[in-house]
Amino acid sequence: MAPPTPHLAVRGSDGTLLLCGPPSCQESSAFQRDDRQGKHMTFSSDGSLFGWCNGSQVSVIKVSTGELVKSFDLPKTSVLEFSPLNKVLATWQHYTKTQDNPQGEANLQLWDLQTGACIKAFYQKKITGWCPSWADDESVTARNVNNELHFYENNNFETIANKLHLQKVSEFALSPGSQPSKVVVYVPGSKGGPSFVRLYQYPNFGGPTSALANKSFFKADRVSMLWNKKATAVLVTASTEVDKTGASYYGEQTLHYVAINGESAVIQLPKRGPIYDVSWNPNSSEFCVVYGFMPAKATVFNSKCESVFDFGTGPRNAAFYSPQGHILVLAGFGNLRGQMEVWDVKKYKQVSKPQAEDTTHFFWCPDGEHVVTATCSPRLRVSNGYKIWHYTGTVLYKHETPSNKELWEVLWQPFPTGTFPEKPVKYQALPSELGSTEAKPAQAYRPPALRNKPQTASSKLHEEELPQNMKPGPAGEKQISKAALKNQKRREAKKAAKQEIKPDEAPPPVADSTPATHVTSSFGDPETDKKIKNLKKKLKAIDELKDQQAAGKVMQKNQLEKMQKESQLLKELEDLELGL
Image (cartoon, rainbow, N blue to C red; front, side):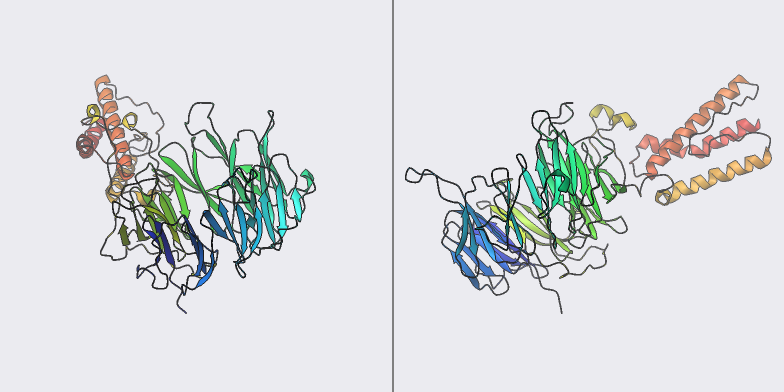
């Protein structure tokens, strides 16, 4: 049976619509476009239902047929969310008070999707953390109420089944997956004490000793907590508002690993600077971190917090694994130019390097073959639109929003895990009328005073670091160009010939690219010794230029001319050493 075609939901100033994904990329005939301006839209976790609010009502339909499941008369609703098994619909509207009702109305409402009845209404003043968190089987639901966690069981919201009493619980995250459910909580430090993260298994909340793991740290004003898919570990990014060293405008960040077996560690990042993004591989055994002052580094770590692969540096601030976990996209969006690097995770080989300028949204399609990039308001109010790509860099569909309209959101329809099996990674770009937008290699800006001079390390604006499998050295010998390899073999042959002619004389360290030991040689004539020393110095400089060229650096005209003189310099050196 052929896998289904995912839909793409689009919301903008001209209404809400559903688009069939590749290869057709046409508006869905099952869904009647809503021309009213939508406030919010969402799919259920299995993708079977689609809900949206348009300022007059909240509607829920079946995606496959377009059949209306339920409609709620809730004109003030701002956001909505489905429970994992589609039994409950949660809606939230802004909290308001009136003279007649100074307490205000309960603005968080939970609706039974079968009957349409309101199960329970809560007071929830802030939109941050508004939605209750459900376990995947809906056996447990959690809410943060006045810095205290309340737990409900089997969607019975009339009775609080359990409470987690901790002083000022600020953040929490319920684990995904099957039972038993686990919860990780964050309590900010007070009166000079440390902040801490604790990991519990529901319903064992009998004090600090009942915690599965505990991690404390001082440098934290806020945290973000990310479970892996198998619920075996949590990544905690702790951030401060101000970097006391003055090195970063964005404050200071640290990354912590906390596992359910009690292990915890601080992830050691080799480059200083902000942590832009952290992403778990869906296989739950490794994660990618994008960090450091620009150009940022990206590194994959395993569950032991050991570096698996280093992608070097580049203009990037985000990492996105495909749903199957076989492809990783490193991207630079927001205030960067939209460069994307697509990597085959199993071989750590780059697939493509397209560019999507002005991108504000990026999402993987559940099929693991396609992505969508979008430029949305209010982040950018000009050049709104979206593109559907194949990961090889080909644009398959492009929509440009008219200048008098705005695009607000795009969203892929999700599917249960296993719906789309992993396919072999392709390296050849797919044919398309729209072509690809492969980023053209551009030279770094150089001030006018340096443009006619040889490029030196001090004239670079930023340090450039290649991925670890492309660096020169033992791991990167296969990256040496044919010309460099040929010259290397020629130098080694000359060195061997000299050793045969003069077995008692130490050979000059010209042929070796590694730092040579200092050997003092004298031919009796100070002038000859001086010439030999100068020739060796020039040959060493040529070897360094060749290494830079093999690493992909663009050579200047005078540097190329210097490299062409190598054979002449070698001949002069040989003549001087032989006393000709």
